[in-house]
Image 1 (cartoon, rainbow, N blue to C red):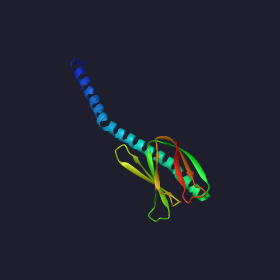
Image 2 (image 1 turned 30 degrees about the horizontal axis):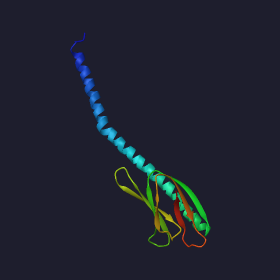
Image 3 (image 1 turned 135 degrees about the horizontal axis):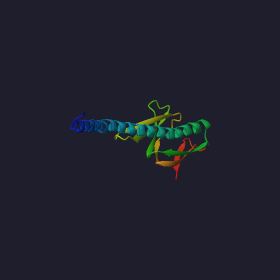
Image 4 (image 1 turned 45 degrees about the vertical axis):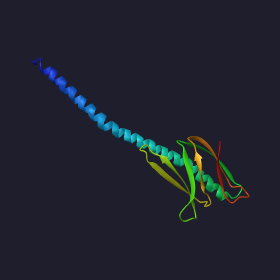
Length: 150
């Protein structure tokens, strides 16, 4: 038969094994999972912001291709506040639209989108949530105007 004092030893060993497994899970697996979640959230925010801001680039290109007098109205839904800058490229033939996002690790990610229209300069501030943007090329003007409507 079994000795009565061996049963306690076996239970204690099982408890120690379970505690070691929980410690490994807590100190190794959970931090790696948290990093993966932060990376996924950053990636999602970058993709969502780039998709929304690229609508501005598409509208600018469409207004430019349609000529003076054309106008586009956009509704953008942004995950965070951003400032969109318009500047000329190095080759001075095209302009670019650029903005930067704050990442979860404190760094900033710069994103650039090329434009066919080369006379844009300045910036526009867009807030988190819905923004109504108008891209308009006035008949009497040589510059496409981009502005936010409250």
